[in-house]
Length: 396
Image 1 (spheres, rainbow, N blue to C red):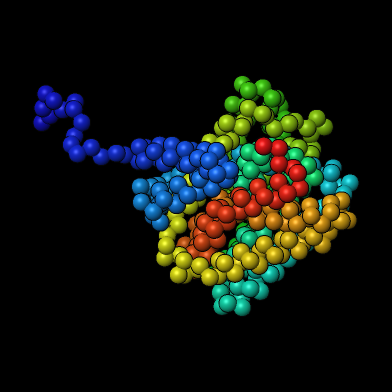
Image 2 (image 1 turned 135 degrees about the vertical axis):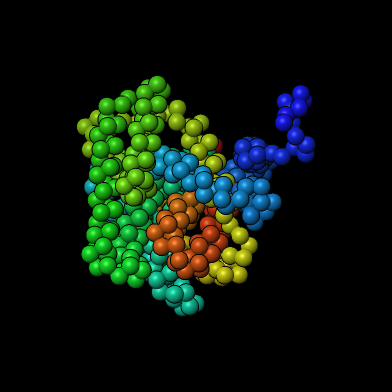
């Protein structure tokens, strides 16, 4: 039976999950501003540090179970950013300069091959190596877009960075689906399901992308009120991909590309998305590192370092091979190759998608990838800063 004073709080006070999430975001925001204003470090570095401290690798105030509950929020945040990235990719530009496609294919192919070779040499199982090599192709769309916005960078290298990030992200999703046919056969042994699974996912995701892009053509993206309609359409697309077990990442990225290139009057991405996009980015960077655990270092730390080295070298060689034919000099090519290094939430979600389909898959995959994501999310923002600054495209 309740007393007359039951309206008073119970003692001791126990903060709920909302309190810890709010405190984490507040601390992340303050840490990001401190990094930027005091030391001229990227704000993203501050967000990543707080993500590590808030998760099981630090104080554990936000556990991995809560991160799993936030999966839909991650899909929304990354989906919006992928939609924006796709809407920045001009196929007309690529048709006029086919060396860009050559550059993209070279850096993606070399990345896959060199990561495969290095991980095989150090004894990582072949199937795990293939999955990691497929994911390693992708550059972090979130980090690239937000660093571009933070630096207000403009120029040939920045535009190529956006284009190559959009392309290699597409390659990574499609290649991972093709690789999953092997895993599907190993796990389930059904040849018909093995052959139809990637076809269903890729074609179905592209169909959702087409419908979303066609629907967005009727929305004036520059009208801040119509922007609410755009958010609603994107949320519906994400919900549909979830219901149909399709790829949210592929659908949203492809939708942006279709909207940009198959509309006779292509629309610009709304300027008023900036504040919302930045909030989504903070959430993404914090949640991505919450799942990291220190025992992953023993299980996959060395392999992660080897993968990072092979990946960065492959992207640098791939870009430099076609730098001059594509219209940039060697210095710009080096800057572009190094700026393709970031890896973050996109790779994390590809890893989690793999475990959703194959729960008993090699735990070394998660260990290697999360170790790599922690290192690259902490240190590559500064590398991108330095690369764009060295060629004079940093405006901030």
